[in-house]
Length: 253
Image 1 (tube, rainbow, N blue to C red):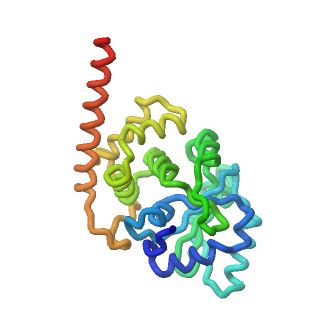
Image 2 (image 1 turned 180 degrees about the vertical axis):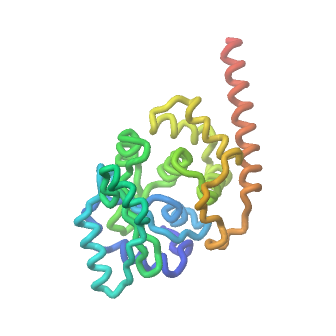
Image 3 (image 1 turned 60 degrees about the horizontal axis):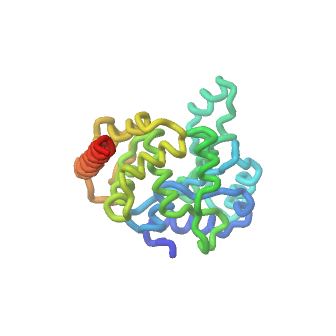
């Protein structure tokens, strides 16, 4: 059962509209990000709806039809994709709207993105990753394990306080581990463990959050980055100690 109580009222209403809308049904979209995780865990509020396509570009016509329907239903729709980003992409010969679109629909940020980061290996993996059944939604919602893996990989793309909080909750309360986090990055992005381990610097706070980090205030979350970093230090120390013990054991055999 989805934890709809984790969504603010406006987000809950727009989610309900999207959830059964026929224009989205054949687009092959999946809801990822903090909202998908909050719908499973109810661990915090989440405001945005982030839909991903597993194709190389977005289903432009289908999204356009959905937005037209929103307007016909007297919903306010505003394109909020940064015009500077659009212009810079066009200078480089890229039509950004083919890969990402961002709107504010009745005050709620709704994004559509092709899963281009991480290359083909990441897109192929998540296109075939486990999704929930029985959600009564026209789009897919990933399982908890799939969302954990996506959150792990997100550390290679951006650094936000909410992602760090989500990972802390998954490791602290839901059986996930630092070793599993690194393994997901190695397996899915096809890189070496030494490269994947760079994300540990983020978890320890040695890499600051992004300049546009939204923080915790708007979602009324009473926590601090210092507390999150302290938690991860304990977890990473335990992981590194276990690695040393395992290596010493293998050498003595």
